[in-house]
Length: 277
Length: 278
Image: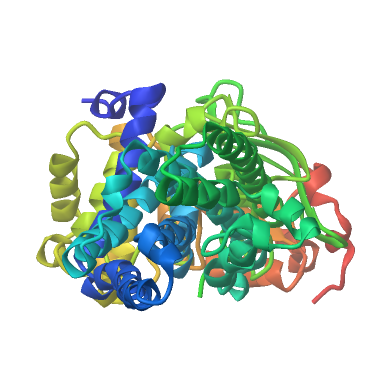
């Protein structure tokens, strides 16, 4: 039997999907054989939720606002973690390839860069779900607060923060390709640069005017404003959702372009075979 | 440029005026060669001669500054992904994930290459390359020789028509190295595959290769079959020829063994040929 006959088709969406699944399988094997990695996924979201949950209980005893808007801090913590974990999910999966000096094999396989990007984002989604779902369920048990009570708006908030995290993660991957493992710590701290301007725990209106303008170009700001609107005013604001979706479309397009540009630059500079520990 | 003989098999790999420069460093300088289908050729040269750079450009891991590359008739600079499913490579300088077992690593790559029956092919390779006993062990716990065989198994998963091998028997004991060479010869002959390798094992090159391209400073400074080169340089083996070339001891200095004027061409007339005599 010829090799061609032994190979399934290498073109088209079905072949692309198979290659993406192969990359996800690679990470599944990795996590299956490493309990510390699994633990790390759920550890921080759970810990954060517990701390902020107690803070919510304390504040509710002192402030009418927190009585009225039950769970606004817990929801903010969990949704911020979606954004953070989503970004980290992309960049850590990429870092796994750098740590194992495997990029040379990956990039001479039929896997295209776009498929690799898709596999990283898929893996990011899986990591976020593993991290956030247990913490959310624990919040129901500990504080009688269910983030799922937000209903359909929660899906919109989650999706927007997930996509924004992908964008940040992809830009970090590009920087890692260009600057190597010396830039590894960027994966951990990059996303925190936007935390003060995302109106996570406080409304946009508390910021100075000029800062509000900066905050307004972040999709996350519109998500957290929308979240407070749902929890405090019991209103779902479509305008904020549209803003977030439009900004995310621009961010993701730019991030994919940046990743591909850095990939090309790495090929021009001969960096792919040099990447490693 | 040295093309395949007109009456011979078509070229599986064809490289034309390939150049790679990094700022002011010229890593590969107007390199031209072709490797006929179903044959094994070697790129030899000292460290920094440009072998790995050349192989990286053929694979598409590195973009050339100038020049053209075609593999199996496919332009690698324009349609790389049409050729990649029919190619593969192994190198001791690129690892497989250490925390994955040998079987898991092969399964991932079998799926990346789109094998219809990955488990069967992995089983075949495990047996042929004597990997069966440690297929379930994490790759990072394998010995250097076992890892080399695993990398070779990965390179053979898709039964490639073109195989690029960097130090294919590095870290293998003589017995295993010999068996791998026998395996590669059989693979090439039965599959009519084309193999381009870079190696510092001259005995291996003499045995496997019908053609050797000697590189220095990013250029091919001489080429021919191992027997031709040995005869031309008046040496007993390819290792001595390698040392002559690496140290720029020109054939002219070998006296009566010097070959005739047939060795001409742009890639053999560069400044490195006018350097010091030994």
